[in-house]
Amino acid sequence: MKHLARILKELEECNTEQDSSGITLSLKPDNLTRLIGSIAGPLGTPYEGGSFQIHIALPGAYPYEPPRMTHPNISSQSGAMCLDILKDQWSPAVRLKTALLSVQALLSAPELRDPQDALVARQYICEYQTFIDTARSWTENFARVPSLGVEEKTGTDETVSPMIW
Image (tube, rainbow, N blue to C red; front, side, top):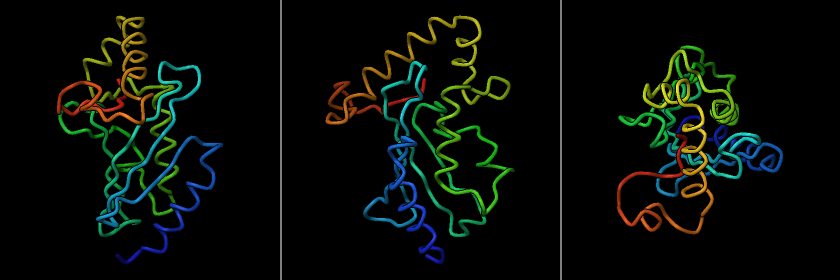
């Protein structure tokens, strides 16, 4: 990979500051273009105390093209995230940590004008307490138990991981 030195530097930067940011980044062992980011649920949100995994795929032209970040419960169809810096606002100056911090910020202030999941956005607007209760429950049940996999926790092999509801 052409920009391996940058990726390794970003991994080191992100992981040395994890205590203050609540963000970690690791390579998947079998592929240098696949990473796992982990973000802590922001304080004062129903996600507080949770840890959420983000799957990251780096394109061959990284850092000149944005990484693809997905999470199973962002979009029920693809896991895609609606975040401008992962699209038309990307710049090679943006670091993976910055992108993960932006995802973390969405947990505190969701983008309701351009939601990835209209059902969840509608619930947030029309039934806010139900939204809060659901998000808190999902965080409690799926994002606070790092020793159990989702399949073990749910008793199925369906993809419901520590999600952002």
